[in-house]
Length: 231
Ligand code: DC
Image (cartoon, rainbow, N blue to C red; front, side, top):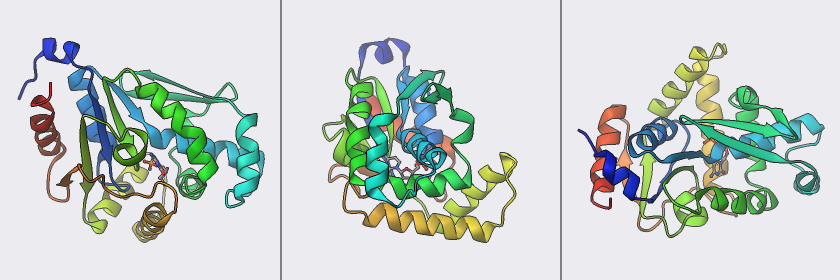
């Protein structure tokens, strides 16, 4: 399927993609952004950068006050190039350190802190303010871009999600048991869905896609069919 170049230059939609870990959000968001000539906004990378900074500071990520006090002391920069985000914390490029199991676990904890979410909100909104963005996270359609032009909520069977995440870890050279990844994912799901501020819930006007038995290409095609009607 091809989606014409002149359309992608003319349109400046905000496309919001939410869902739990392991549903394939990043993969499809990156592909959609590339097809449309849009910016891919990986908001998980921002939460991961905060997690990295909290760990580096030696503070307890579960100590909401200590984490909130740290926020004004560090600078966060994000640059996008060909679908890859480079993230600097206090001038240090931390992009390569953000996808470890330890940072994933800490990101899940700090992302439940209201002060962290409030601090990251304008940063995300500023990046997306001119549209032409595919924004991916947990609260894109509900909180960050409630007026997004198209909203998707991806879901998948927890076993399938754990297997996908496990394959990513192994491919990245980390060694760990599938059971550990399954347990991590279940813990993150519970935290993401039950936190009081901006929990992981579908927006009322989001379109659901169950990616359990769909290929990446099939998911992207379904999404492009919806988006093409808005271009
Ligand atoms: O999408 P990810 O796995 O990179 O996200 C890392 C953590 O950040 C995850 O536990 C949930 C949190 N997160 C969030 O709360 N809100 C977002 N918009 C993006 C990520």
